[in-house]
Length: 411
Image (tube, rainbow, N blue to C red; front, side, top):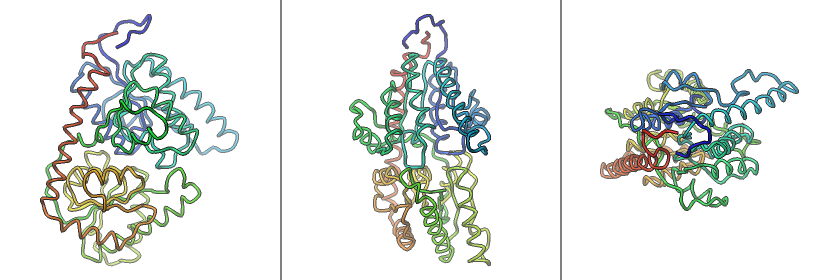
């Protein structure tokens, strides 16, 4: 690694992890888990730290010293008016100083996967996009190697957000994208991506659990209000989506199916409760064991849960991805192109629907079609999944050369 003038030599590399981690999104935390396993296995002497949105959970679950990323969002935000504006201003100064200071203390900072360059869900530019830009600038300022690892993106229409994310992407020492859609999006936005690597989503590195599949249908639901461009129609989009999911669950129940409701973030819990309330109203005599919900604190728990299911109809990206990884009959209720992309890549392009306009009758027909496909079809899916896992292991060799010359390197 590049020596810093006046820096004291250290025996162990200092590796930081950065992102919206520990805040209830199991996909984000699963990506962190995979990268932690890589660093601890190949560089066991590394000193680890994390700057994230849920430091308490990261410290308790992963044993990594963690600090809070966004000052304002970790405080009581019930205030309004002038006081709220003042607190936000104070928080932005505090965030800037924190990121500058923390990045300087690291030799390497890894942003582990997830859609960190996306605007497919509502996002304010001066929150996480600003933090990402500042991380990139800090890395260049202090000589810290910042790696954006297998990240997702889309074409960003909002000018300020696009500029901030562009700073983050251009400043990174190493970039890799989790699909062609993400890499092509940045090429369209004027970034030179010719040398950027393309590797699968980090979730493909997670082990496949043992489990006997059943006839239970996993239905993945989400607190969905559309994306950044849909703010004015957010409640309308949510109502349409939730209503469709309620009707789909009722159709499955009427067909005699058993259902397991899946989520991917703590914020999805209200949708689960609304579905249960709908069943109590419209199917009051239903055995409560016919429709249950899974509490899934980690991505590993989600994969274990899906291993015991017969099929999955999912909305959250990692609900769909984990089902594909396990070669399950999978239907994607897509809220962004990244979901259509992974479905097409795995040979299931025709089994996607938009979360903004769910056709329940079509969902029922698609599920029946998938469940009737021969085992040879699913074996091809298993082979594709295994190949993606091998690609990720090859990427670790690239990271060793790019971010860590040797495990004994010092400053």
